[in-house]
Amino acid sequence: MNCPNCKKEINDDSKFCIFCGTNVQAAQPKAEENSNRQAQFTQPVQNQQNTEPQQNNTVPQANNEVPQPNFQAQNYTQQNMNYAPAMQPKKPKNKKMLIGIIGGACALVAIIVVAAVLVVNHKTKINLNDYINIEYDGYDTYGRASIDFDSDKYFEDLQKASSSFKKVYMSEGANNLLSYYYDMIDSLDYSLDKNSELSNGDTVTVSFEFDNEAAAKFKIEYVGEPTEYTVEGLKEVKKIDPFDGIRVDFTGTSPNISAEVVKTKTDDVYSNIYFDLSKSYGIKVGDTVTVTVSNNPEYFVEDYGYAFTATSKDYTCSDVDKYIDKAADISDDTMSTMKKQTEDVINSYFAGDSKYIGVSDLKFEGTYFLTEKVDNSWSFNGTNQVYVIYSGKVKSNEEKKQFDETTVYFPVRYADIIEYADGTQYVDTKYASIEGETTLKYSYFSSVKGYTDKSAMYNDLVVAQKADYNEEITEGLK
Picture (tube, rainbow, N blue to C red):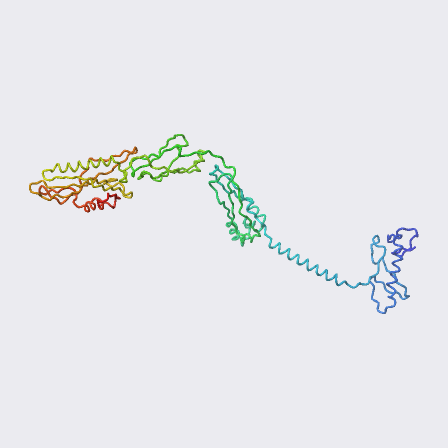
């Protein structure tokens, strides 16, 4: 038989062609089919006038025999192909498929463009909270909080996120971005809403400031929302009342009292507590003095481990000597003492000049009570003044009467009447004397002491001192 591929004669029982290596037995059925196909496609060739050369370069023969394809010339792979098919006629193209292919291509282009835009505009987010650690120090109630910002990791992450940032950071170029680098770095700020006088369980909030416009130049975006942290780990402290170790002494006479803090405990803790007074002098009975701890409470805790339960306390001035500041506060005993002394002064005065003048019908008329104004303390005329006023009928005892019997008012002055802390009172009567001088003459050029005109007496003794003293006047003496 002949090899279906190279057409050379081989043994009938051969499995493979000894010339071209074709699997003869497998190719034989297909060879017959191939011959039929060749006949179908090559038959019209012999009837055509202008036949074009075939792809297998087979030239039509003059004897009108159907040409056989030269398989050896085609150089087909023998082990993979058992025959060489003739040219197939082109099928008409599917328009729907073509439109689909074009549409798919357009969609692919759109996806690529969108992806490219996303890549160009993509920014790596830097969460600033990732670099925050809150540290707490000190004692409960006086604790402190601070932010430990991991700047090493922060800059390391920025370099990983942006190659252009790394170049600027490492000073390896990208100088056109240098200003944005400084804007971005300088804009970053973080702060605590409270960082002192903290207690365990309190919350503190970390807030951030940053410039994402500058960061965008490096394809970086900052994020960082205000975040709360709970205070913990502060050391416990003991409590101490600093006022347990002191007393306030008020000395002097109201309204000129002085105040002083006296320590009553001498141990190491109390002896190192110091105080300030809101007022230390010019204090009167009933005034309140505020004593304040001058130590820094936080430092005291750190030094001694004690926290103050209070840092200020009010002390009222009481149980001290005072100058009488109201006429009604003059006791009956004190008033009796002054009235008796006034009568004695008047009688003594007339007794000394009885050859010339005399007095009768002495009568208590009342008092002028003057108290020093607070803004004008330390007056030389006394903190308080009392004018005990008597009236009497004065006559001339001379042989030749110098004046007719006249009513005269005798004011006798007392100053600095004190009420002691035990409630008893004191008035100095040693220097009491009659104030004023009348126009009643005797013994040549002498004048009777006192006033014949109440208005003149009031003007001289009260009105003249209104700038420094407040007044209480008995009815009928103005």
